Length: 118
Length: 118
DNA sequence: AGAGTATATCGATGTATGTCAATATACAGA
DNA sequence: TCTGTATATTGACATACATCGATATACTCT
Image 1 (cartoon, rainbow over the protein chains, first blue to last red):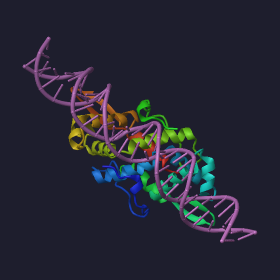
Image 2 (spheres, helix red, strand yellow; image 1 turned 180 degrees about the vertical axis):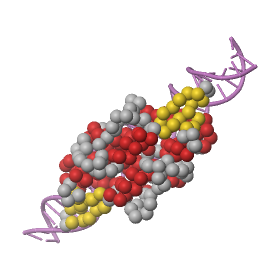
Image 3 (cartoon, rainbow over the protein chains, first blue to last red; image 1 turned 90 degrees about the vertical axis):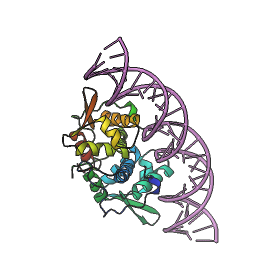
Image 4 (cartoon, each protein chain N blue to C red; image 1 turned 60 degrees about the horizontal axis):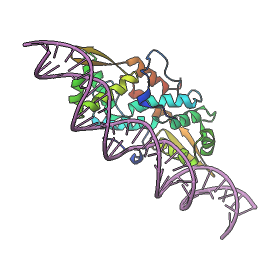
């Protein structure tokens, strides 16, 4: 029934993610996939991460800055970033000692589209 | 940190639910509220319920029909319908012996809007 | 190579919640 | 009022996962 978040492949943000929720009867498999995506957003910390990254003028943030901003441990923040990354909502780039995260706006737009009537 | 789903008040679908996720730095409280809403959608069964209700020509369905459509027990379906109702995503109306559920499209639209840049 | 910093992984634990059987409640019709 | 049907609630249980400390890995600089 569930699609385990931990076992998700890194999402391809160019592929369409799911049919619109209200446009037709979705299958159980489609429901599981879409639910897995919403489960990624169903976390206060992860929403704050997305918001924090989005407001940066350069649209990207180093992970260590995010650890300071949220009041969570470094392993916990690292975990959330990984979940967001594997859902295709973030992309990352190593830059010397640190890793910079950016939001994948197309992926968010896809998800947004599923809440419409298609 | 969390807003417990069970303890949510019946949402007022006319009130704005949350600021757009990408338009500014959201607070921890806003993140908790918004996460609680996404948690409602983070369930395959609930997404199927929304989809099933939406495709009906009259845009409404009796609960007993939904029990048959999903392959879940009546208490479980009743539980999911309650969660959707309390999140403001469904409205219900007793009609004789059965209860008809309809989708609150405005509420879904609000949620959709939070995924945009505002 | 060695030290220091940033990030990721591991293992353990607590909590939220999906699920069902059993039961309760609400309503319609005889 | 009694019977049958539809829906909701309760209680118990299993599981997903958020969280952290400890540790591992990756990189830079000297």
